[in-house]
Image: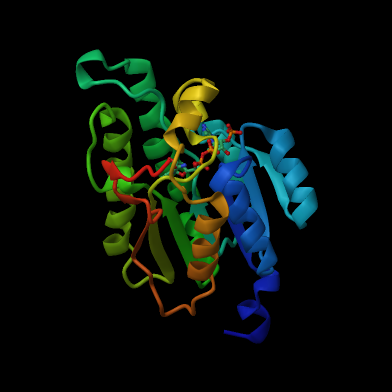
Length: 251
Ligand code: NAP
């Protein structure tokens, strides 16, 4: 590899869901390493503003929409890093009371959204000669929890899609890293509880959750490893959280 292509100055990173939380922090972290970051989200004003700040490019993206994804990836011939971050949860109901629209949203966004992005960008990742796919799953991809089946099943499916590629892409110049965070204080719970701020705040009360920057720093570390080093899976949780189902609140 020539010096110019191994320099991060000419390297392109795509971050989905870059309008808030982990995605926005990741866009900043990768830009700080010299990547040209292409930021996507439905709230295009937010990604354009952040792109202007970090010298990247903001484009509207709805990962649940084939045409939106096709417009977003148009002209991206060589992509070094794809961060599949767009996603989230809706509701917290027992299976007996499952809201099918909530389930559809979670599966469309987390699972099929990730599939659409990967399918669309695989040629560009391979063409870069040193591609990396980072998928933000969750501890919800590792264990089920009460009332969370819509989200945990979507995250399990997203994770299996990602892990399958580790086999299917063997021999190609593409690395794969799954990042499985525990509790991170972002807009995640606000979205999950449909804008109910008190309910969202209660999720993080009396413990110290991770910040979006904590996760972004780890993604930055992954992206800065040399091409022969593949970090397969990284689970990161707050010290106060031992599993998806067990944490300590000290008040
Ligand atoms: P967040 O602040 O709510 O960010 C979610 C991002 O996803 C937003 O930028 C949102 O942008 C984007 N998004 C949602 N639907 C989209 C769509 N159809 N097309 C494109 N973008 C879409 O929450 P976050 O915590 O940073 O979540 C990021 C990822 O981390 C998610 O996959 C989540 O499941 C995962 N995660 C979060 C936690 C946590 O505790 N926070 C833990 C483990 C894993 P727009 O609304 O502008 O489209």
